[in-house]
Image 1 (cartoon, rainbow, N blue to C red):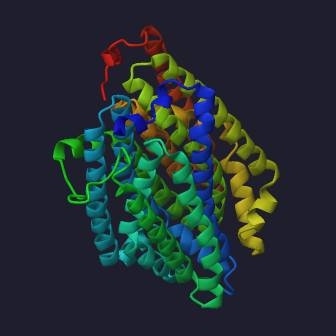
Image 2 (cartoon, one colour):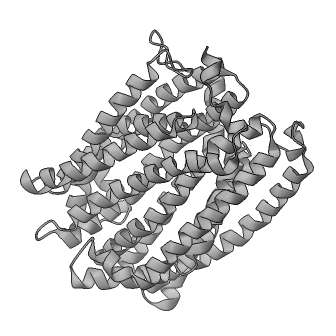
Image 3 (cartoon, rainbow, N blue to C red):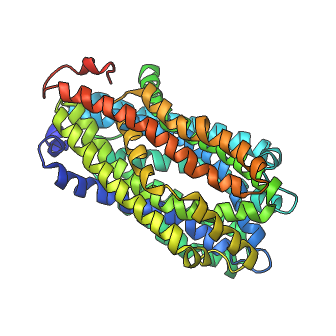
Length: 465
């Protein structure tokens, strides 16, 4: 009976229909997720007598938040990818073991992160660009976020599995729940209860715990073809863990690279522009992040489709979903470019009315997103290699933009230009170079897929899941 509930439509239904079915909920979920982060920033930016510095303090926490996200994707993305491929192979027993492994690994990783950050909070935040003016705000926010980190890791990891196992609508609804409830609780905790930036962090943690509670209830339902064993929900198979972590290594390193990049960015902005320059980057990054998350939503929709069909050896469908997802991603980032260049003023005004911070953020986002349209293709291609289990290529492409190109630019250009403008112009330069390199890899992959007929052994591609 369990087999009849598996999402076999991934291998039979039209790709256009599947993209609508899987990507639209993913887009809504990831857009909601980015709005989730933006809501905190918007309310924090309007705290009386503290808004501009509080925004800068929040921006200082981004590298630490990226480390947390990196650890979460290391476990969650690998497990979700394995499960979607195993479902394509109709291997439901192993898929259940992967699910149990993910729960155990998320708890372990989350606890380690919490203990480490609480023990060394101030030195970490100072290292990431905090000053004596912004440190109190950054600390107040991150202490509460760190305490709730285990719940956050577990919720986001299991949410990815829900989507990959054929229920993208539920994954979307859970994300929408956290966004809406956070938007309700934020002003209550921040302004009514007078908790300030700590209220924003507490609202975030409470919403994620509530969503996690329902997620666990869902996976303990034995009627689901993919569920947790009530008797042994926590299992750790090191062989499965190794395979899962290997697949998740690409997005993990990409997020870890983001941490390193933001570290360089914050310190260069602090050096050449001061605390408010960091706040301006925080605002510009939140706006840009919204469009990037729409592309991530498309990637999440593509992941189960590409993974399932690769596992089922239907390569023509893998090519089709990749091409169509890339086109949609390019369209999304083009809209982001238009807003960044021509509508930056109303976008920035959502976060702050401080004149100096507003001017810095408007100028920064226009310079930062000059070549925004080409980023979507680069993101989708990197995700495809991960979906197909081609770990080394996924890792390499994940790192090129941020470490190989962006970090040197961020280090060199500000000193050459003598201002923080060098930081902003580092983004379009690195985006262009990384996209050219990604195009070379994409052409090679499509050529190899073109040589495969449906049903052939995929070992010709040089990688197996």
